[in-house]
Length: 446
Image (cartoon, rainbow, N blue to C red; front, side):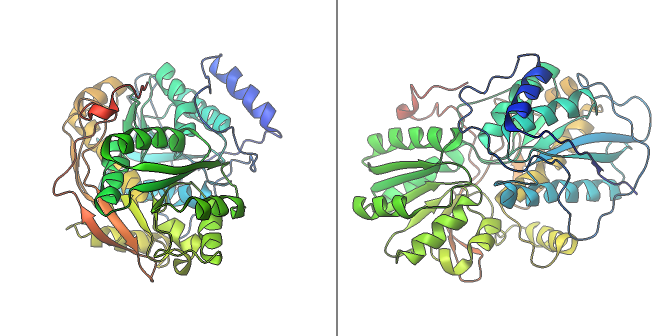
C-alpha cells in the first residue's frame, strides 16, 4: 500500500517567503498582474488531516527528471498535489485535494499507470501565492514529479505558471477561471469564461435581470471576470449598478451590503472566493435580503461552500457551474457514493471536486496513449483524449488544452444541494480568448 508523502516547511514571515520564492526561481517569477497580494495566513505546509480511509501505505518511490517526467525504473511514479490546506482558501481546496487522492487510490487499485503505482507528494500552498511558487519548484526539481494537480485561485496559478514553464513540468488546474490565458504546460480542466461566466450573464439577461452589481474578491479572477462581464453587458443591453472588491479572507460586509441596497440592482453577480462567502451570505440574510429580494449569481460557491455558509442563509440563490452533486449522468451516483465512503457521509462533491478527480484520469489516459510519462509525449498525445467523468464525457481540446464542458445553472435547495434549472444542450467548446464573441475583441490575455 502507498501513502501520500507529506512535507513541512516553516518560513516566519510573508517577506521571507516572498524573497525565498524569488530566489528559488532565479528571478523568473513575477507576480505583476497576479491580482491580490498574498494573504497573511499560517505558513505551515503540513497536510490537513484526511478523513476517511486511505489506501496508501509506504513504499520506495521512483520518478524521472522534471523536464521529461519519464520513469525508467522502479514500480512507482510520483505526482504532486498542491492545494491550500490551510488559510482562507482551505474551505474550498481541501476537498479538491481529497478528489485527487481518491482518483489515485482507484487507479492504483486497478493496477496503476503503465504498470506503476502512483505516489502522491502532497504540499500545502497555504493560501499564499509565493508559497505556491516555492512548492511548485520543489515538486519539479527535488521530487521530480511526473505531473502536478493543483491550485485554485488564479493568483496561485499565475504564480506557478512560470515555474512549470521554466522546468517543463505539467500542471493540471481544476478550477473555473477568467480565461484570457494559455500555457503549453498547463491543462485547464475547470471551466473557462465561455463555459461559466458568459452563459451565466446571458441567463440573467434573458430572465429580466439587466442591472447587475459586481462583487468580487480583490485578485485577478474577479477583476478580469468583471472586465469580461462589463464588455458583455455593454453589447447585450445590460448595465452595471456598482462594482466592489474585498480582500480574500474579508469578513465585514455591512458597508458593501449598504451599497448594494442603495444601488437597487436586479441581481448581484458574485465572484467572492473562499471563506468570505460565509460572511457575505450570512450578513446579507441578516440584513433582510434573501433570494427573492436580492438574488445573487455566484461563480465560486459550490456544495462545500454552501455547507460553510449554512443552507438557510443561501437557499434560493444561484450558481453557474458544469457539475453538481445532483447532476444526472450515468457515472455520477457511483462517484458520489465512493467519495462519501472515503471521506464520510457528510462530505459533498462539487464542480472543482469533479474537475480534480477527472484531471488525474485524463492524465492517466494521456500517459497510456503516449505509452510514456515523458512530458512532451504526454502533451502530444493529449488532444482528443476523453474520460467519462461524473459530470459527463470530458474531452481535451487540442487547440488550447482546455476541456469541453456542459454549462449548468443551479439553485440552492433547503438541503444544501443544487437543483439544476438550466443547462446547455451539448458540450461547449472552450474559448478562453472569447474569439467567437465580437465584444470579446480587445480584452487582451496572455
